[in-house]
Image 1: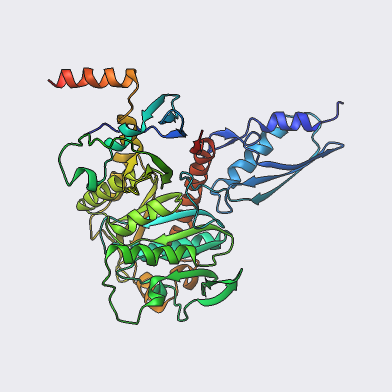
Image 2: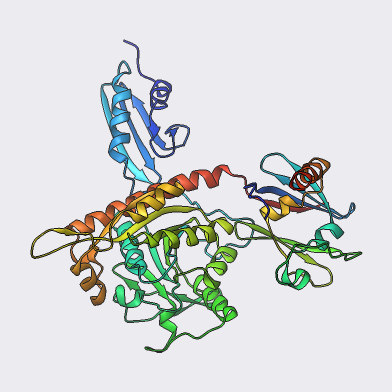
Amino acid sequence: MAMMSGHVPVEINHMRQEGMVRVTWDDGHVGDYPREYLRGYCPCALCQGHGGEIKFIAAPNARLAEISAVGNYAIQFGWEDGHNTGIYTFDYLRSLCPCPQCKSSKAGAAEKEG
Amino acid sequence: MSAVSEQLVLEALKKVQDPELHRDIVSLGMVKNLEVTDGKVAFSVELTTPACPLRERIEEDCKRVLAGVDGVKELAISFGAQVRGSKSGAGQTDLLPTVKNVVLVAAGKGGVGKSTVAANLAVGLKMHGAATGLLDADIYGPSIPILMGVREGPTKVAVDGDYKLKPPLAHGLPVMSIGFFLEPDQAVIWRGPMLGKALHQLMADVQWGDLDYLIVDMPPGTGDVQITFSQQLKVSGAVLVATPQDVALADVIRAKSMFDKVMIPIIGIIENMSYFICDGCQKKHEIFSRGGAERAAERFNIPFLGEIPLITSLREGSDKGVPILVQEPRSEVSRIFLEIAAKLAGQLSIVSEKARRAQSLKIVTS
């Protein structure tokens, strides 16, 4: 299970031109999430089924329509094809951060676990 | 002798800390209407809740630091209160914009006296002088109408071409319950989406008016209703009610893990049915053992707000629809409820300070 980071985002910027979502966190960390990447890791049960590891499910040309906050704890992304059931908790979103720093620390942790 | 200036007084008052917020009262903006003329100093301290348990201490501290300022001949301190909002929650529409603090009273399981505690907490906050409302969200066993003695349901009022529900008043508190919409003795047999809709209406379609606190009596457990609240509402925090035996700990852990997941802070634990004082022998009987909830609070570093005894008059008052705080305001158990309400208000002030400092989430498109 992903570790609880306890970090919360302070700004979510949908950069339409770049096709990315930039998340700025309360600790100053910034991550740029390509939209196909975000959609591929949609955690909802329609995409992932029930149980098992979260898999990447490719959805080429996924276009973001809407971003909204859910309570105190998550972000919901609505896509142009109408899909909007994915609720990304802050911890999950942080664990997805694709920046080189986060990627390499995750790879390191995975190696240690063997 | 040099004259005292406002500057000097403020400098001195900066040494007075709010004991709960751990910051000085000047930078917290609590010092208002300061007037200094010919050595006469007058100001008011705006507390963050009328139920402030620390008012006397703040007053003494103010007097002490100003005694050390040359030229202060007269001192007049008055107290006021402005409850600050503590609702945190990201940019979603707030269903209760006129309510400053929303407090969920919850328990990991049923039968711990959660509704009785919720009703008396609401009455307690009201008695401390705060505008308070009570929302019964216990879909499966709405008992607030009985506990508060409400016989009439809400009335319809026209607002901006639309209709809203005006809650009935019980002992001075606006009260809303899902029970008002059910036939008596009928059970609610609804699936999740129906529950969500009903709750949404209880929040959005009710004319609560300006409230400092809204106490919500939650259904027991960890399910649909809890999720709805955490997703649709800006909530200040949750209070857990538990009984003293060791298994209560397991319930507290469950409830805590749920609120952690949806990031609703737990602002206190209350132990109910802590002990029974026999009316024959005056001996304290600890029927369910004692201190389990306090141990749980310690273990998770959650403020322990107090323990409520098992008392026949508390049960009798509840059955009659007259909360013990109204029926016997001077009794020992009423004193306990008032103290717990004050501690809760204090915790909410702390949460509000945190919520204010935490930046709210901005969602933008560029």
